[in-house]
Image (tube, rainbow, N blue to C red):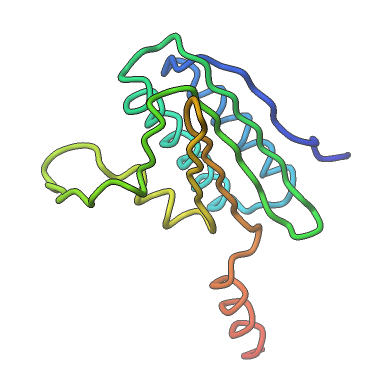
Length: 153
């Protein structure tokens, strides 16, 4: 059976769309050999990114357009996700760091993206933002773990 070629979705910023998108991306990476942990982390990052678009770029509006593409390049065994919005265009990387209160919900979306993905890039567009995220099937830490585990055998 051949793995699906990719995900291409045009959705609105309605949070009701999150589960559908999350499942589509999770199924894509699972079909391309990403382990269960990676599938869950990637799905969480896509969910967080889309929720942030709705909350921050669109100020909570649920009827604004979002384009998402996700592809796995088998040459380098990496997932590439692109999320395009036509919102405020504010680059999160240009904002000063916020002091986070652990007793208050929220504020962990970007932390998750940066910890669970291998590369996260925000590129301001003349009319919004493009977020590009990459995650390799096997992260460098896993290579080291496998090397040590196999060396002891």
